[in-house]
Length: 327
Image (cartoon, rainbow, N blue to C red):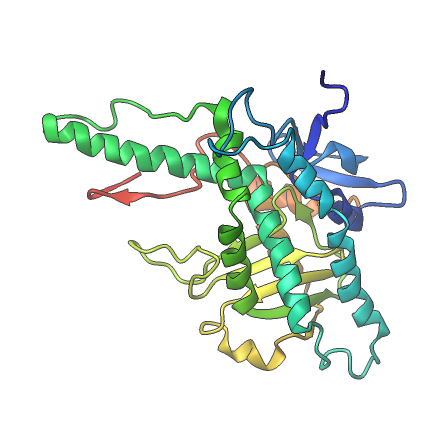
């Protein structure tokens, strides 16, 4: 019987998406793969059929049989936490004296920890994150297999075959991280240690969000070392809260000059800065970008300028360097 099962399982909290929707809970969507925009109810976006469910008889933990739809129920239990934390941030801005609003602290220690935990869960639950860990699994295991075969056959061409993960078991691989409290706590602690800022959009162009709402950008480039991790030197991380507010976390050593503004609201009146924030949402979205208003001109322009970013074919999410080769 499947009558009581949740079929359409959300990868982004609906309570979060309401901050980018009207009173009828409709949001505007820009689909970067189809290059079109349309309105729809938030129930219809950032979701997948039985996305977190395991194949029949399969569990990520061989010793423990998990209840049916365990992960979906877990996310349902924390659904109400997102609006509480976001409303607290936004209301503190509007309730502050106009002359002091940009100098008063926004977060307490507990606020930061709780928000970091919610952000960590949001990072881990998306389709984009799942696609990344599957690609990492494939490339890492192919590097091991290539090395094993080449020891037996020095002339072996490692480009002669592909190693693909069976998509039927993608939810099981994904669950090994979603159900790892140490992994989630570690990620939350990494986020908490950065400099926290809240960007205030003073322009007419609203902030976008997407089906991958927590985005990041590396500010240090190196041919052999990735600086794109959440703990990396120079990393910046952004999480839009609604059309007017974005929570930004930046790494301390690279952004030392921002320590004087830590925990504060930062006004932004330059539309190019808002476009930069929105470009991160477009480029890192799995597929769809969301906005409270039908203001996607810059999204169409961005995809015309960078068509490869708006095309999912052959997209590379992960690089693996092993045995002198790059995968």
